[in-house]
Image 1 (cartoon, rainbow, N blue to C red):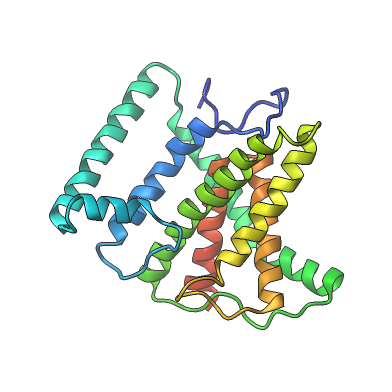
Image 2: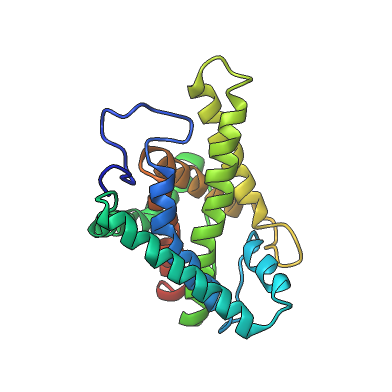
Length: 243
């Protein structure tokens, strides 16, 4: 992207939403969202904080053909928007690859970083995290986690929550820090709630809390798109490759 680059230039003014451009990120994230939505038709996997697909399923009276038609129309509209932005010089499609490659680096190093922090700094031992899944299910689960959890916990709770917290703190830095901590804690706790939640374990909670902080840093210092792709690729590695 040129004028709507995902990562802002080095001289860009910092905001509570970070240095990246949210609108540019949403464009890059949409294909993952669409892939997840269509994957729900093929697997029983779904994300716990995904409210969008449920609303669409209810709107089409749970008819798979109508559900598919809605997303086909979304895809066509998205492609037309990309074409228009590209012709106007606002969008450079090749900019997606640096985002993906950088996110791959974050995804492949994140686990080692968290284990180092837990073992060396906190003295906590994690016996296992995640689990194994068939590649198709792992792909859909990872897509849902990357898209919906980053939209809810990073863009929503951290970004928008941080904007609200600026009314309570004199300096934006304090609001950003509190929003990052609270959103990361909510992210960790969410995995233990509900009927499908995992049994509570301090080490597992700490693992996901640190992961939440790492994704918060990626979201803030890079962009929402970097956080989504990093989360997606990390979960795919843990669920579909590492096991």
